[in-house]
Amino acid sequence: MISDTSTSLLRRLPRRLSTAGTMLLVLILGVALTACGDDTGGMDDLQPPTIEGSIDNQSLVVNNDTDDTAEVDISGVFEGEELSFSASSSDTGVAAVSLDGMTLTVDPQNGGSATVTVTAENDAGSEDVTFNVNVDLPNAPDPPSGS
Image (cartoon, rainbow, N blue to C red; front, top):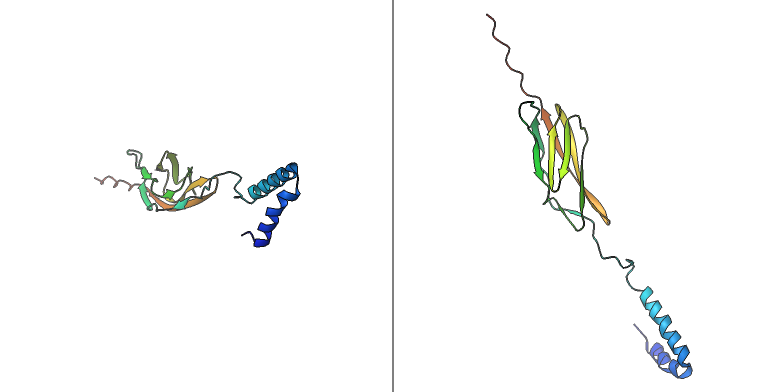
């Protein structure tokens, strides 16, 4: 806030300064006020992603005859602007993962457990959501009965 003393001084300054001096003062004040503006360097106020949902744990079976993959829609998991996504598995020998748009595919590879991490990222930060994948091997067929 400008005090009464400052206002009085500003009113008297133009009378005491030449026109060039007044223009210089206005320029200096304009630069000073601009420097006091926001410190984002002209960038918008991009916020980091937030977690809005979760992904259920998955139980899958390795089966050579059928494709027992899980497809998970991640569109409701994160909120934010200018997001890019990635996914990784703690053990790709158990569960391989891939992303196609907002669809995460979990492909069982071998029996065991893995943790899958899905990351949303923008220039302001990142957030991770994890879930567990348990992969079982198919039941062995019964041995043939002896004769």
